Image (cartoon, rainbow, N blue to C red; front, top):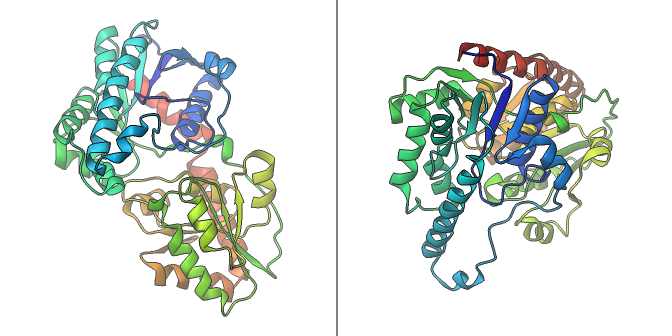
Length: 386
C-alpha cells in the first residue's frame, strides 16, 4: 500500500456545514480534519478541500434544528411527517454522493456512518482505495430513542450500516460495549480500534484558582429533550433549599431553551445562551463542577473532555461507554437516576475541598489519554496497517 497522504473525510448528511460551530458533529469533524492537516495530510471533506470550506463558509449562529422548509407537512401525523423528511433526506444524500465522486482520487476514505446509505463503501470501491469507518451510533436505535418510534426505512438503514462495516478495513468505535454490539448484530470480523472523538478547539486546559465560597455547577451544550436538563434542574432545586451557596449555570441553546427558561425564571438558575471562545473560557474559570445529565449507552459526549480539560470536577450519567472512556477513574462521579445525581452534587457541597483534587486528576487523565498526539498515534497506526 502506498504511503497515505490524501484523506477524504466523508460524512453524508444533507445541509452539512463543516464550519457550523454549534453543530456537535461539524465541530468534531472539523477539529479532526484540522488535526490531520497539521500533521501533513491533504484533507477533503465531502466535495470540498478543507481550505475551501474555511474560505467560503462561516460559522452559523444557531443550533441545528429540524428541517422546516416543508411547512405543509406539519398538518400530517408525526410518523408520516418523519417518513416524508426521511425520504427527502435519502434523496439529498444521493446528490451529495454524486458530487463527492467527482473529486480527485484520495489515498483513503475515512467515513462517518450515517443513516440510510453505504456511500463511503461505494466511494472506496469507485477509487479502489481502503475504507476506514467511524461508528458513531447504532442508527436505528438512536432514531427510535429520539423520535419515539422506529424509522420506516429500518431494514434499509440496517442493511446499509452492515454493508459499510463489512467493507471497512478498519472500524473506529468508542468502547468495547459498542464493538460487542456490532459483533452481535452484524457478525463482524473487522479490525476494531478504540477512540472517542472530541473537539480540540474547545478543550482549553485551564489552570484557574477557584474560590469555594460558592460552588458553581454547569451544563454546557445543546438544549434538546434527550439531554434531560430537567433532571439536573430538579436535583439542583432540591439541594438549593439547604445549600444556599450552590449555583447552577446552563450554557447553550436549542429547541428546549425557551421552555427551560420559562421553567427556571422564578429561580436563581443562570441561563447564558450560547457562549464560545474567550467568553466561554472566562466562564469556565469560575465553574467548579461540570454535569452530563444524560447520555445513551454508546455515546461519548464532547462535554466529558471539555469539562475535564478545563479543570472541572465531572458528574456524569453512568453508561458503559463513558465508564470505559474514563477507565472508572475515581476522579469521576457517576449516577443512574435523579436521586443519585443529587447525592453526587451534595458530596461536593459538603466537601468542597475535594473539588480541586478531583478536577486536577480528571484534567491529567484527559491530557494523558485524549491529546492530539494520542489521536495521531492511533490514525498513523491505522493508516500503516492498510
